[in-house]
Structures are given as C-alpha cells and as structure tokens.
Image 1: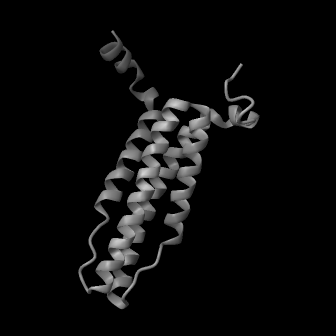
Image 2: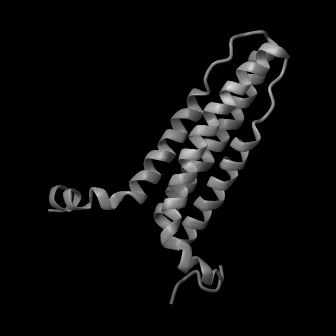
Amino acid sequence: MDPLQFLVPFGWLSAVGPALPYAILVMAVANMGTRHLAHRQHVEQAEERDAVEQYGPHTVTNFGLALLSFLFAVHQPTGGSILSFLVVTMIIADLFEFEARNVEARNDMSVEAPKSAIVTSGLVLLYASYYSLFFLVEGFWNQAIVA
C-alpha cells in the first residue's frame, strides 16, 4: 500500500510517473532558452524606457517546471523534493533578478545578466539531467561508486 494513496488520489500519476524526469529535462532546457530571450528583451526594454516587463514564455516555463517538479515529488518523494527545492529557489531568484533589472532600467544603468537565476537554473538542469539520463552512466556508477 502506498502511503500517499488516500492523501493524494493520483492513480494516473503512476502511469505517467516514469516519463516525468524526461518532461522535466525538456522543460529545464526550455527554461534556459527562455531565460536568454528574456534577458535580451530586458536589455532592449531598458534602452527604450524606464521599466522592464516580465517575459511571458519564461513565466510559463517557470510555472510548468514548478508543477512538474511537484508532481515528481509525489511520484518519487526524495528526488522530487530535492528538485522542487531547486525550482522554488530558481523562481525566487528570478523574482529578485527581475526587480534588479527594473532598478537598473530606472537608474539608466547597464542591464546585467541575472547571475543568481542562471546559476540556480543551471543546478536545476544539472539535477534533471542526472536524474533522467542516469542510464548513460549507470554501468560506471555501479562499478566505481557502489563496489
């Protein structure tokens, strides 16, 4: 009996659960791409006016990544909790970096790259790729680490 069976009645999650790491990896790569496009748009907006606006596709990938990581936490509690922590940290870093871009735009400063959000999204990408692509290093891992 699954301990979460009565708390969260997601019978369908057991069917799609094995595909979640791959969906998270695709969403993490898309998030990195939209992060680059959002920064490029923020630089252009800061040159034209005194404020920057949120980039819609980047917001969608942030929330999609959060939703997938929370679903993954139900399917695989340990790995999903670690990933959810990283994703929530990335979203908080995005919020602070967005406000920093607004301050730079209002004060006619050069718009810097969102360094903390890039690092946290890199960690999300690294953990998602480790979890979904583990089969590539499984033989070496079992020989070198486990034995």
